[in-house]
Image (spheres, rainbow, N blue to C red):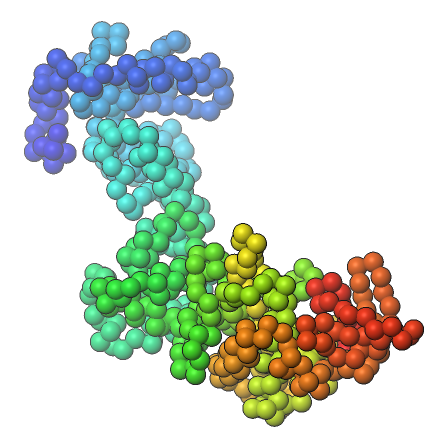
Amino acid sequence: MEKLFRKETPLTEVLRELWKTLADGGVDVTPLRKLIHENVDEKKIRDSGIEFCIMTFSVSDMKELDLSMEDIPEGMLEDFLLASAYLVGFKNEKLHGKTYIDGGVINNVPMGALVDRGYENIIQIRIFGPGREPKVRITDEMNVYRIAPHVKLGSVIEFHQRRSRQNMRIGYYDAQRMLYGLKGRIYYIEQTEEECYYKTRISRLSEKERIETAFELRMAVGYTEEELYLTMLEACAKLLHIQKYKIYTEQELYAQICRRYERAKEKEEFPGFVSLLVRIGRDYVTDLMEMNTRWAGGTVYSYEEIDSTNAEALRLAKEGESHGTLVVAKKQYAGRGRRGRTWESEDEENIYMSLLLRPEFSAGKAPMLTLVMAYSVAKVLREQENLDVTIKWPNDLVIGKKKICGILTEMKMEENKISSVIIGVGINVNVESFPRELRDKATSLRREAGREFCCTDLIAKIMESFEQNYNYFSEVEDLSFIQEEYNEILVNCGKQVRILEPHNEYEAVALGINEEGELLVEKETGEIERVFAGEVSVRGMYEYV
């Protein structure tokens, strides 16, 4: 057969020799015949109104047959389907006195049959099996949509169920690649970035690093920054055994690579371009690597854009990431707030971060971590940045009467123990303008201070502050160590507030927090109530605070 495909021997001679060799034996086709019989309804096909064609080759007549349903006598469709499927090595049985072989051996891509019938929109599905591929003239009026694998599908006579299911899966994703214009050769990448994104990243490579990486990845001369970056991305993903059959954005695939790479024990065994890729995608957290902490931010995942840093931290927690892992992003488009609210945050001038914790104390202590984080952020902004920041119990920071920071804490349990706690922090840093509906409620550090701030510097300072306070909290398991100072900067303290419970609403005077982090309020009757953060919302009488 190889001689045939290389055109070293005439077709008729090869086929006669082949048939003589296989005439006395081969693979039993009874199961195939049974499969066709059980699954093909000839009447439905004929009545469908859809043109149905078969390509086969008559060895008896040495003739290629291009058959429409009109060419096939009624009741004989099953026979001709079997005739079109005979492969080399099959036990070839005569059908109606003639011998046939799979038409793909002679014409592996029968485009001509469709062109001759006048079709202008053609979907071509390739499997790159053995056979000849005659040239077909495609006119400007025709649209050919090509679905083709970039990986080997195995032998054409391999019918193992596992292999078949895998090939169908590959076909499904290859079809999506064609339909949705996905990038990648072996991965399926939804392109969400502009050209400047790739230029920025590749520009972080030295000329020597770029040349060596391109050579190692066998890049063709004249490659673009996008092609080099995506090739690096796919090569790293393959080396780190990341699942192929899934649609990723560039950022999602990069995040997977970072996770696997951070967990790898023998990093020096990877080619040099793996560490290069991780490096050029992490410019946002370069300064964070120098944080003066023992565990907070020990591992950092950085993103240009993400749905939610809390959601990503939860995903990382499920995958086993360690205590102190920090997720930061320049943008998030599906941020979450308290009480199920969504938070759209499309500016690149703010801090969006989430810290993964693995506490050993009881679940009842976890809500106090919101207050620990609020205090830690306020302390940095007040003492190191000289800003008059106050706390609006339990999870907001304000300057004047406008919000500059929100905190969301989420906890997961396993077997009646804390599995993970995620503390999300969003800070308005350098943003200068707000939507009309937020102008009276929100502000930023830049607007209040009249200067720009370095986000990475602030993140590092907050992690250092929180780590210290968390360590104290873990020892005493209450807020006694910050209670006095917390109440001094509690904007609600001594003021009239409205308590919004699920089925009750009343007014009271806020007195401050107790050691458990509950807000103490005095009702008009003089009764002292304890307000639990997870159950109520606290508002000022007439304004945000």
